[in-house]
Image 1 (cartoon, rainbow, N blue to C red):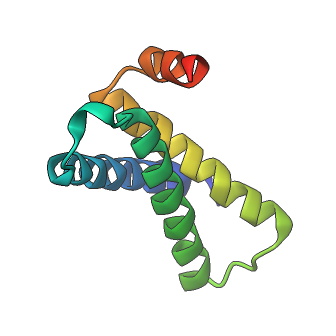
Image 2: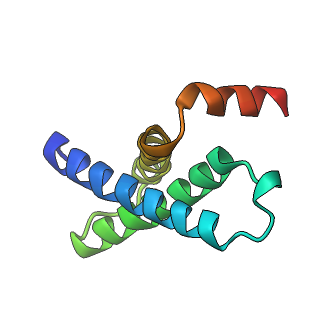
Length: 99
């Protein structure tokens, strides 16, 4: 995967993660007890990992150990960029360290 492909996929996955998180926020019944940063991270891991797996499958890239690690890292990177879109990263770090 070259840098251009990585950045295009990262942009797409972060937008999709943000939209899915906003949808979850709007559908949630008890909004006071939700940690939106945690929801964003979980959503981004799923979207980034599955999206990268789809990219690998469509381009006949083999699923090696390195490529699986790249899938997880893409999920984390898309979570980071999605959190910057609607919440602050500092707030996320504070929430994770306090709980």
